Structure formats: structure tokens, C-alpha cells
Length: 227
Image (cartoon, rainbow, N blue to C red; front, top):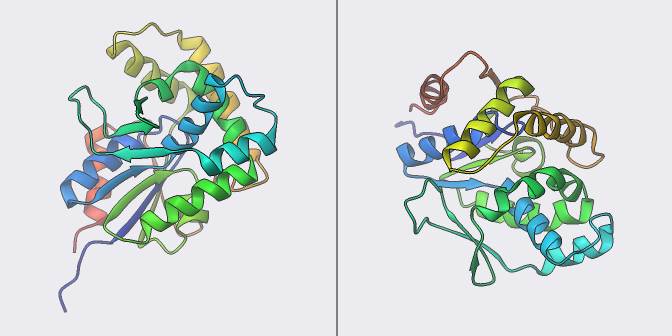
């Protein structure tokens, strides 16, 4: 019997652990869909901020998440993006990665109603197979039946440096200390929320990326997908 690569691949981990970069490369190598689920929570947060909504009004934010017209499409610009993020007809691919969104996305993503609304959409896409899905609760909640589960982590200092470098490379201004403090608080919120907290699935393969290059991590995960 001919073996095939895992059809549903879940890559979980905290912000800037390297999972999106590796996931994108892995999807390209396998010819799979790359789906960074965190972008949906960022989109909901961006909408709330731009509508001047009270981010602590869980009911209002949940209702908005249920009805929001959020689409993720193949990239149309060669500016480093992995996909286009469209809200209505507006391209907000980079806006949803702003500092304001960074600072508030954990609060919004902790709401049970928001997670339920978005998780259902994510699950429907994932169950089609041939997908590399990246997030914080893919292996534990969204797709516990994933064929391969990997949990990637790194120190807060290393992850803050990566995020700082990413922003500087885009030609934008960045403050390392501010990014680091935001990272620590986001880790706390993500790990302690009552609904779908950030944690490895029991059967996930753990990779600490502190001392590994992007290519080393990618090659390690790619090897796990070999038939």
C-alpha cells in the first residue's frame, strides 16, 4: 500500500514562534492550502477597533463576529503576504497586523462566542483535507483528529525580536520593549483563558525554535510528512 503525506496538519504555538512561516513553506511544498486561523481573530479585532466598539462587550463583539464578512484569498500582491485578507471589499492584509490589533486580539479571541463562530468556519475548511492549519487551538479544539500535530514554541525574548525585525523589514517603526511587553501579556491571556487555552495537544510533537533557524524547523517538520 502506498503511503501518503498527512492530509490535515495542525501547527500550534504562541505568537512569533515561527509556525506561520514554516506552515506557509510546508503548504507550498505539499501543494496544500495554507490557513493561518489567527487572521480571523485579528480581522474581528480590527473591525471592532475601527467601529470604536467596546472590546469588553462580549455580546456585541460575538454578534459582530457571527455576521462579519471576512474572506481569505490567494495573494494578489508580491509584498510578502501569504494571502489577502478582505473585509467587505477592503484589503486589510497588513492593517490586521498593526500594534493596536496585537494588543487587543487576545481579549477578543478569549470570548467563547467569538471562538465558536470562527472555529466552526475553520473546521469546515480543515475537514476538506490537504491543509496546513496554523493557530493556537487547532490540535486541541478545531481539528483534534488532525493527522499530524506540531506545537512550536520559543522564549518571549526571541519571539519579540522576530516580531520587531518583521516590522522593521516592512519599513515601519517598532519599539522592542513595547513588543516584548505585549507578547508577555498576550501569552498570559492566551494560556489562562477559560475557553480553548493555548497548550500543546497530548499527541503533539513539541519543537523549541529558540536555537533553530527557520530552515532547520521547516526541514524537521517536512520530514514528518514524508510518505
